[in-house]
Image (cartoon, rainbow, N blue to C red; front, side, top):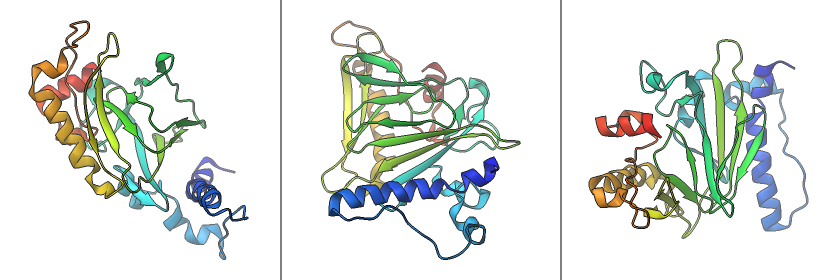
Length: 244
């Protein structure tokens, strides 16, 4: 099976995850979903990596009980970020990914063809991608896919869609001692479309006052924040993106 053909099965991963969640919630007995026509005939609608569809996922897009984002690993160096015709959340190859848990700060590798689950409530940060620690009330699945031919590597984010009073939080911790410096939350369970506006507002509020960046415990001066959406960068935010 070719790599491109394997990619066309990504929606099956998403919808099977929906099925698992729905089955647990409703105690229903079924194990799969089926289509009544050849996969090739509907690949144009199901292959999210096609140029006509992938742009819909550069932010997040509702898919069943989840929201899905697709990130292109299209920057070889920090200087490439936001240049040319790159996507609004283009990833750099040299980035590192971190989570904060019971053991403190942990680096989380992104291994090709691997699936990583960031559990609900876990602060996580991707270098040069978003300048804060994201905390969501739903589990988040990360699927890492390598480049193929002239296609860049991809990162697929499948996050449970918040409901009710569930939220997304944007937090900043001291990079030296992990003391919580600042946090804002958005009740995305009411309307997930609030996410990007709330994210940028939190970044700008954190950056607006120097006291937000100074750790009250150790006195360290922490870098500014920045949005995941690179076109929104102000000069000082782009400088922060290149820093952490």
